[in-house]
Image (cartoon, rainbow, N blue to C red; front, side, top):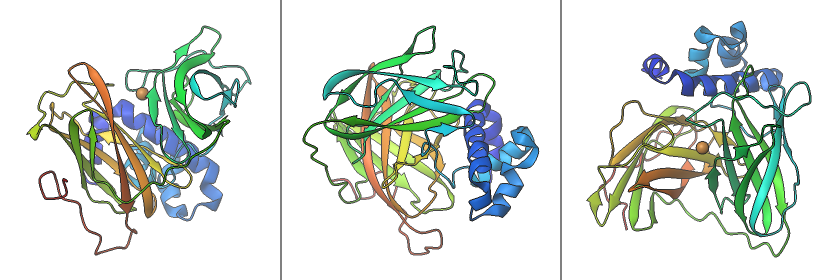
Length: 311
Ligand SMILES: [Cu+2]
């Protein structure tokens, strides 16, 4: 948690998104929250302006994942059709505002007005895309769909409101063949790139994750900026697909390590997806991680790259 104010200063926009969502959740879940003190300290104070927000971002904003609700902060995710055929399909949706009309004005976060995550509920088929918005507020984007139930998460910041992550289910008919998450995988290969995950995998603490990119055994040192950072990491909790807010480290260079800060809200299994860009192509590396309990003392810290868990 130390150092958080510095990151707030450097990444005000990013953290504003996070603290806004955290405050929104705090309002919604406050009465039932198991950590009322934390919410008293950050969530309810001063309606979310800067002072309380910094505490919220560093202290407890991540204890409740986002994206579990279709409506939050006065905004509602509405899929024009919540059932689409398998294959490449156009998804259309609205973000409805407090007045019941589609929102047509958004603030830019990470270079985009809206980030859409689509993932099948067995945590396969991950897609992080940037839909197009028509003037009437209808968003649309092509997705590659396979049979099953999908979770659609819209990470966005309507102008004048709080940033929100809204989730909705999308059904794709057909023979559903769920894939097991499998065991912990701290290295991932994609298109000839090998990405290794390191960091403390323990719930309830702010943790730094380092993802190290190699190709043909050589560190990649000329990663390209993508969405205002040198990579974009999405973390989802298995079981409910709760969406964790993840902040890129400040001023990181061009690889081979990409660093992020997050906080796992509970012990359990998570799926992490790293989008990174190299030589003009965005690729996604994915990981299954087992996160230990908040009080665990024997939870192994994964090594940084090169400490023996490559295969
Ligand atoms: Cu995005």
